[in-house]
Image (cartoon, rainbow, N blue to C red; front, side):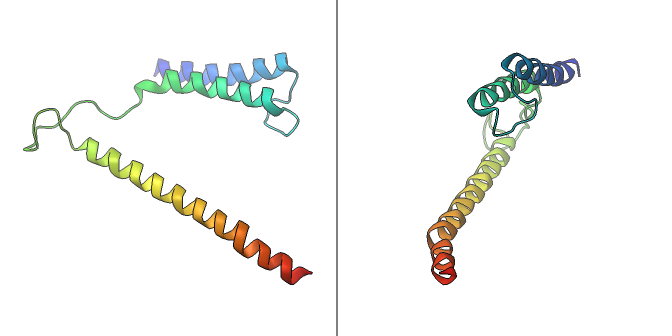
Amino acid sequence: MARIMLGLVSVFGILLIGSALADVPAFPTAESGDVGFLVYGLAFGFGVYFGGSLSSSRATLATAEGPGVGPELGVIALAAGAVAALLTLAFAAFVLFEYGAALLIRYVAQ
């Protein structure tokens, strides 16, 4: 619990103090530019570091698959595959809209 709270405090502290020192708005806007991106990246990097203990269980269950192989590996692979599939579909929809529908809309609008 202390790691979670330390992670949250470090994220908000870095965001507020870093924004004040860099003289950019505390919330991400177009004015903050690359400096705001750097501050947010640093803050969330520290937050992920302190929250690293909140990962999946490393204990394996006794299964017939073999020693050291737990069912969580299959769940992680399934989740990673689902995320990759969704990102691929989102990219395909973007390309279809950007190069297909947008051209058609511009043509009809003229």
